[in-house]
Image (cartoon, rainbow, N blue to C red; front, side):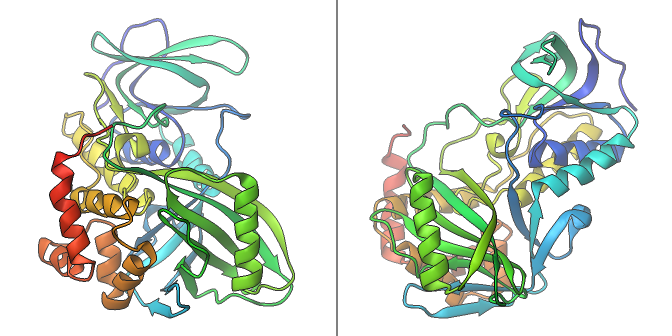
Length: 396
């Protein structure tokens, strides 16, 4: 049953969610589906504070709760080695899904509009702090006004101003083109997750990424795992080379573009920052350090939070197992130091492991025995040396 509102100078809810991206809206969806708490979602107004449209991908046995928002899905996945070898996997019963943030937001907003006790507020959140018996969020509205919201619990999904101290801190940074070709160039049944035929940087790794939307349309991306992002001009040059010289797309037009950077770090992300204030999404450690995938972990985190609140507890469970994070820390350090060859590392995993097991491993869903078998298909010596070194390294 919904608890009575808190007294205060501003509007009150049981739960305030700051940020209307994947993490914030997913949690709002889970809470309103249960119907046990009043919820306020604080989203940035239209304009510069609002992030541009983004693409999210994940794998699952079905389509999940957001089937209407899925742009495309694929039953087969492919990796190209540096030598040009193509490795194609059938990860059944899993499928790879693509969502665009605009369609996802429209779907969840429509559901929230029908949920009693739920509202979406367009405002800029400036401060979140604990107060007696709850927390408050201080906001400014698009018309220049100020508003203080009170809630029993606040879940903050805004990006952190600075990443936590870490032994290794890389970025997965990328730029992608939505292209339309004059002739059919793509197989809509196969997604290219990693194409290592692109030139490799001195440190880290680089790959192409192709998600076909139709025989003549696809999202084509250039991605690097390294310490610093490139300039837009450098991404454009890399994409042009990949599209024309490697994919040989012929005549094509770029209909849209996206660019971003995702943290890949073994830093420890605090999920509770006060008695009533919690961090969720990437800010709460939902991004998988070794891959950058976030959407599936956000769904797990949201379900766990909603279940805990229904049981009378306010917690944000860890979105990834400690075992997965430990293995990721070893991989990131080994890649950053150059002890392993990134393209050979990933190509070897795709070559030797069943598709469903590999995807479950990348999502942290494998057993300890399966993790052991995966480890045997990595460069054991460099990985073991790195694992022995990590406990003695400082987080900076």
